[in-house]
Image 1 (tube, helix red, strand yellow):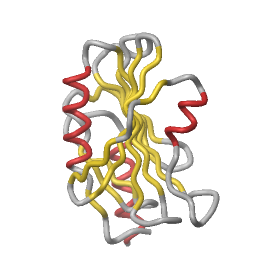
Image 2 (cartoon, rainbow, N blue to C red):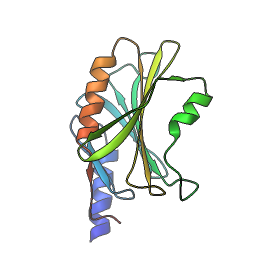
Image 3 (cartoon, rainbow, N blue to C red):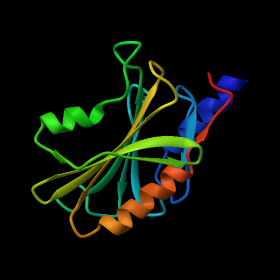
Length: 164
């Protein structure tokens, strides 16, 4: 019965993008509310998360995308470090900022490369546990709107206690 309910949630989510739909990830035990401006949602094949496109500018330089991914570190004593991957690709990073939203502490790395901006939010509940990464890519000029949408998304983050 529980599996049927979870599968139903995944099918509703994967079926299309609607403002304020919930995305529930039963593998990593969280749910979020999609931003009002979401136009497309693509679930990751490995069930680690989703990629959302906002507005009508995708693909291309006007594209705003939010990627939510969860996974386990390679070493049990590791912390999330997705931002390091992007630094290696040439993204320049500002000093990290820690903030707590909806009882979840996120480390935010604001990054830039040419005319593109990217915010990388990383969180884990404890060392060696599952890591959660939210990567937001957007062009210059829409920072305030996009960051508001992402703050709303992170504020909607809830831990699901009944996981598969």
